[in-house]
Image (cartoon, rainbow, N blue to C red):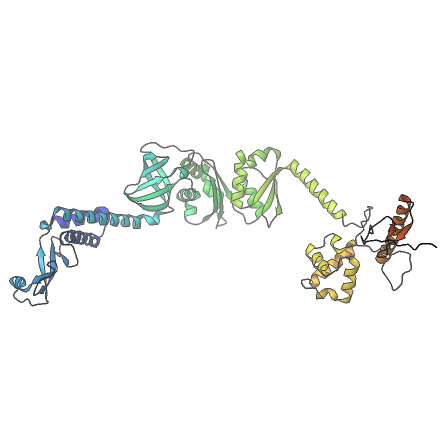
Length: 507
């Protein structure tokens, strides 16, 4: 009949899920810890188990010497011969030790070592058992509450439902059944602890998999779930088979399946809608339960869209405190603006007027005042980068650009491509009209230069007349720029050169 030790080993294996080898290793470590406490070292401690685990023996292995220096690891030849007549100097001999001779402190040390080892082994065993349960539904019972956190009895382990993972709709009492999602598994000083959640979107996904066999069998795919726990959840689904309606399968006959899910979520509203590759259709579906008249894509790159709804559907589309449209934004990953049909008509008229205003800027038939354009940077639609490159190379006005384009010098400018030159040329052709004056010019000079010269002469004439009107003194010309100056001036008002008047005395 097996001893009590063998029975205890089997009991530990069954109850705690610890392997027999781990328990044997724990007993060995415990005896060696007590041995070390007794003799100061456990290097020469030998532990031997019977084949049926009915008994365990402890030996002290010592070296046979002539003159003992360390009595823990050495033994005199004379003493060794008493145990075995075949002993010689240098041989090792195992001497049986009775563990009952260990003092109380040695035994206590062994117990602590065994307890710690068994505790860690138990945690490792539970970790191996529960680490794969992350993302799965688990059922437990309300045990206690502390600082808003609820502790759940899960049998072998303890679960914690933190306050941030609790739905605002739900309240619990002692021994209440709690179904939750395992989001993490961690070791604590008291054992293993499972972190639970009832607000995670994957909690809803797991419940649907339990209630809807088509989802579990991958006939229906859940593309995305967005949720405001306790208020509303939106689920986008699609079917891998043409003969299966994804929304109808999730709702169930007479709503049986969806009602079961809603009850588990304590009455939280759930919108199940069809996923669609087309942005407009998906956005329209995402705003369920509101009816959407149409969807306008404002900016596809920035993912901005406008949803148009009937007047009586506006509040439903937006939802209480904007919840419905906020969830729809997260579901489709677009920024959705909502307007009624009347608001959209006004909005469309404003857009149309803006388009017409922009078009009128480039319309040659409009009887508006013609703007005088001289520089390249003033041409509507010209790229500021191109204008800056031209300015850095002293090509400011339109005529200079055209001359440089004709002689091919524009291609020498670094950073200016043939496409850039062609774009500016096209803008000049479409927006600039050259006006020729009825004045004969030499060397085919442009009308722009003639106008510039006439303007300068007129300005000088005007300045001279103005000076004569303001003063009765004689008017002279500045030797530098030719501007009118008077004798009382110390510098030219135009070029600011210093003036000095010298007159010869009349004889």
